[in-house]
Length: 264
Image (cartoon, rainbow, N blue to C red; front, side):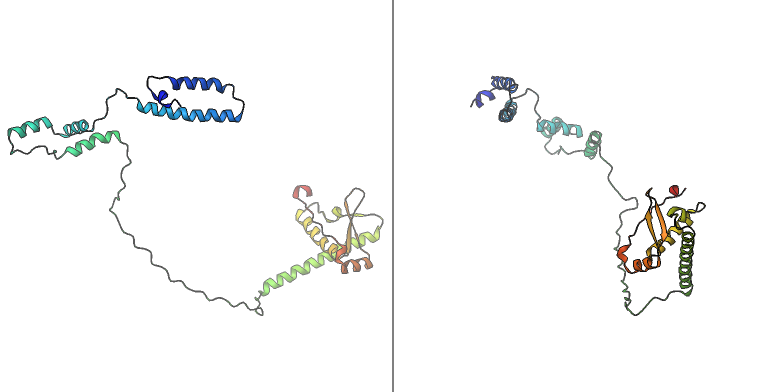
């Protein structure tokens, strides 16, 4: 409402309004009041900007004509002498810049600008030809025939057969030891860890657990937990082994974790 009065350079109404707003802001308790204070701050800022633009400072304003005259004088032209020479002799032409005028100006202005050196080629520019496209060689796709089988080397096949035979023999040996021990003392449970752990070889212990797993899988032996919740193993009876072998749902698979530290 009092916009013109507040913009006047002789009036302090804008300052008084700001001081009054500061006093009112100390009692703000609602969001609506804070929003009104923010709205007033925006209006006051706009009024202050307009008021500052209307102020006329007493500093010397930039005059482009005076700057041009000083620049020409620095570059080597004295306009006063040129005018005198022109008045003395009309045939003499003056006012031309010396040959080194712009170089002189460049050397002076170079002190006030920090610029990176321009990029240039040490051996001149060059044009690189695009690479020649290589001809794509299409490979013949091998026909996948179900009847064709990869021939296995005889030596590798022999090794696999020998390894399988050794595993079967080791499983049969452990099963025989288990059955013999159980027949000699059927009332004493056989500890699973006492059976498989080799005190002198961690690798041998892992192999024993691997071989015993075949015995459990085929139903020739079964694992139980004793009163201390430790696994014990005992051979299955002939009837139980056959029944377990035909019914896979009667058995469960168990993963045993055994680290080198636990083995020690």
